[in-house]
Amino acid sequence: MPDLVWASATELAGELVAGNVTSVEVTQALIDRSRAVDDSIAAYLTPTFDRALVEAGAADERRARGDALSAFDGVPIAYKDVFVTRGVRSTSGSKILDNYLPPYDATVVARCSGAGMPMLGKLNMDEFAMGSSTENSGYGPSRNPWDLERVPGGSSGGSTALVAAGGAPWAWGTDTGGSVRQPASLCGLVGFKPTYGRTSRSGMIAFASSLDQAGPITRSVRDAAALFLVAAGGDPLDSTCLKEEVPNVLEGIDRGIEGMRIGVVREFREGSQPGVQTLFEESLTRLEKLGARIEEVSLPSFEHGISAYYLIAPAECSSNLARYDGVRYGARVDGDDIVQMTSRTRAQGFGPEVKRRVMLGTYALSAGYYDAYYGKAQKVRTLISRELEGVFGSVDLIVTPTSPSTAFKIGEKTQDPLEMYLNDIFTVPLNLSGTPAISIPCGLSADDGLPVGLQLAGPSLDEATVLRAAYAFEQDLGFSERAPL
Image 1 (cartoon, helix red, strand yellow):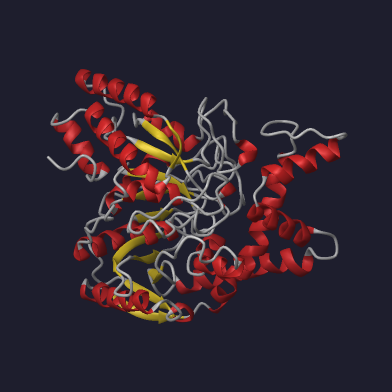
Image 2: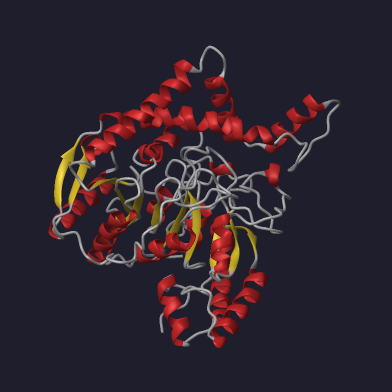
């Protein structure tokens, strides 16, 4: 029987089906591990361990009756705190929502609960998902299990830290500009961003609505595909959720990539740390060995992705965060009138990065500047999408490093927002286009011994090809290194 702490979700499900272990035993092992490591990694904002054990007991009873809700009934899961959970504190990493108890579950949470997955708790994140390191959390940073002096990435840093440290077999994150893939890269995990609209945004506390996307963070590609299938599909509660039938992406995942055409983006061929660049080039060789044809493609608009993103995302966050006014829900700081009350509430409730982006977004949307900034950024977004469509006419996938560097030290980039923003240079264009992408481990950097991620991206709605290529690479590489924590 595999180690319950380090087993994949698929392995745990197999052990549960075989009757070799109970959900209560699995859940207790993960809770014990979480308690042992969380003082070091600061992954949890709100643990729900007692609830998880009750739900695990119910899962065991269902299995004993032959009434399992799904193949993963009894396999525990944790959630980035951007997903609202009925009756469980949901903060989005912000003090302004410190005591918010939602009256309903996010659709992603509801579907996982409906599949019988016990909830371990809510995990740390950059405030309102704004950041690349989890240092912007209103509750302090999470830490990378590979090196506690370094960031786990962000904004889903609590999710990746917990899974990488053995506290959960998988977790949900969200990806607005790379916030599932980049932290997965920095923590040696798999992070998958489906096509925009494949998974519901209902109950995800909004940052930038046209970019936000729920995504699995797992230890294996097969687990990422399985968790995606649990939550994907149309949702009447989300008008942007696609109604197209979701194919079973697990079927044929092991077919290999013989003859597949994979494009290397010329504009992103260089610019990474030496250790990252070396592993990227070795990964291209590995893909060729597996039967893929590597071709160079040009996507010149990608170089403008960061600039466009940091106009579009702040503009949408400026609109979305206007609801936090001290009137309807969340924190309230009293004042002499409603203007003073709202100003004081936001001044004390929002952190500096949220304030920065709200101001940038408000400025970009203001009269006289809308066309020059926001309007032009949307044109760049359209250009990125069109260029990608053209490239996908000649190749099946594109490949880049996930992050230009390995995990950096806590505090290293907090004084330079522009340098921090560049951590997402390889991931942001794929959020602007809405296309599916995955980060998978491709080794440990010779520079510092830290994980490096490889990003594969495909055409919209073609998650199956992305996952199939990632699975082939993963199986051939056999990356099994664990964080030394």
